[in-house]
Structure formats: structure tokens, C-alpha cells
Length: 194
Image 1 (cartoon, rainbow, N blue to C red):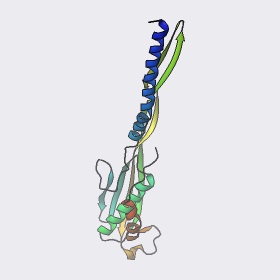
Image 2: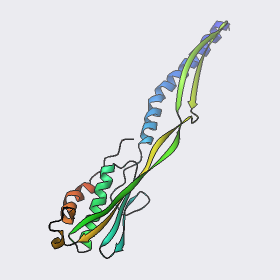
Image 3: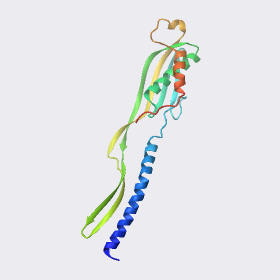
Image 4: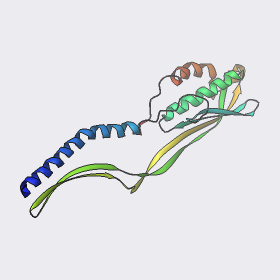
């Protein structure tokens, strides 16, 4: 067998491999994209592994209400969940309204290494021979990026009845919030954009 025929045979094997890799590349990229989006937004629920609401009674009619959510949960949805829980708590305690005494929260952001991956196909010549090369690279982290780990919203609220709520501009009516936010809290969530 001549050197030219052997080179042609190697070239054909390499091209065949390159065609197989090219056919698989969309599936590999799709798999990577899907796995990056697997975190579901935190649903409206009592606090658990995936987040949720909790409350603590601080005084007879004063409560701390919080909602913790993962990074896939929109911030506006976290606020809606927090207000809904405050309204449900107000009604369950026998009151009609609540006012916010304190409003605070935090978002935990971590710095994580950013790594990349890729593959390539190359052709080269040197002297009397030529060759094809196929490579795959999983990147070594060289940069960091900020990633939101969770959102935590907290309200300290004071509960009171309808009579005391008259004339107060800071009073939220529990029944109104339950009617307006309740259906949205139990609807399918919209994931946050990364």
C-alpha cells in the first residue's frame, strides 16, 4: 500500500468520525441546555427543602412572616407569596387587616467558577504528510461569575380589625389580597431568567 493510499484511508476514517461527532453535537448541546434549566421555581408552600413560607408570633398581634425562594423564582412572585401568607395569617388569627412594621429581605449571591467545554476538528499538513485532528475540551475554571442562590423576603406585620383599619393608609385588607393573589399563587410559575 502506498503512502498516499494510507493517508487517504486515515483521512476517510477521520472524516467519518467527524461526521458522527457533528451528528451528535446538537444532542449534546441540547442536553446541556436542558440540564441548565432544570431548577423549577419555588411553589407556594410551607418552608421545606425547596423553600416556602414560615411565620413566627412575636407579640399577641405581631408576626414575622418570611418567604424563601430559589434563584428560578421571580422576585415579584416572592413578594406576592409573602403578602398572601401575611393575609392568610391575618384571617386565620381572626383579624381583617394588617400593616407592615418592618420590611426587609436579602438575596444570597455566590461567586462560582465558570468553566467551559467545546470540541473542534482541524486539518494540518507537515512536510510530506497531512492529518486530521479531533479534540474535546472541558475548561478549567479561569473566571468567576455571580449566581443568585436564593431570595428571602421578610415582613414584620401588625394585625388589627376593620374598625381600627378605618382611616389608615398603611392597612392591607386580608380578604382582598387572598382573592387577588391566591389564584396566581397556585398557578403555574414562570421561571426567572438567569
